[in-house]
Length: 183
Image (tube, rainbow, N blue to C red; front, top):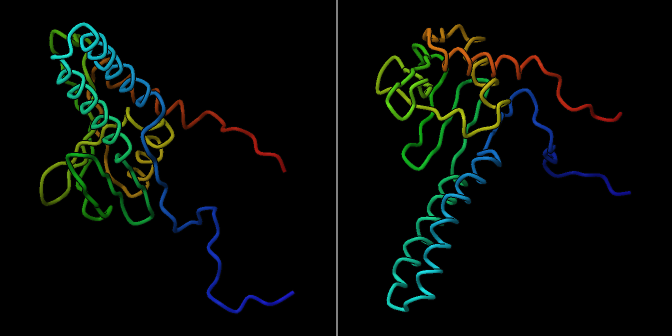
């Protein structure tokens, strides 16, 4: 058997230096697909009734494609040195040493009387970065919060039912054992 003399073959398992990479979870794709699918179906039905309404179908298909492409582009990386968040609206990298604090914020309105929870990361210089934690699998959010705390970054949680429920859900996910692997 010939010896391997070139550069080392990269392993598929992430090592301690490899960042954890998360993409949008399946339920986000499902929600976007159902939402846009409704409008595409309405466009098809309208086009069957009158051929002059085809622009409605084109717009509905375009919006559906944009929504699904936006989800496919979404990415969260948590590494040993910092984080990287990519969405349609932003593409930011922050080292842990650049982060001042992280906090949850609850927005209450008539449509959401219990409140909608958003998560923000405030760097020492520059604008805060909003990270949509609900789009990613719960393990990704847990890993992000754990990494921030491990680097001594305070995470403020407001005293609202929605924020406390979300953090309890994320902490509960961290306590659950993952799937067992044979071997």
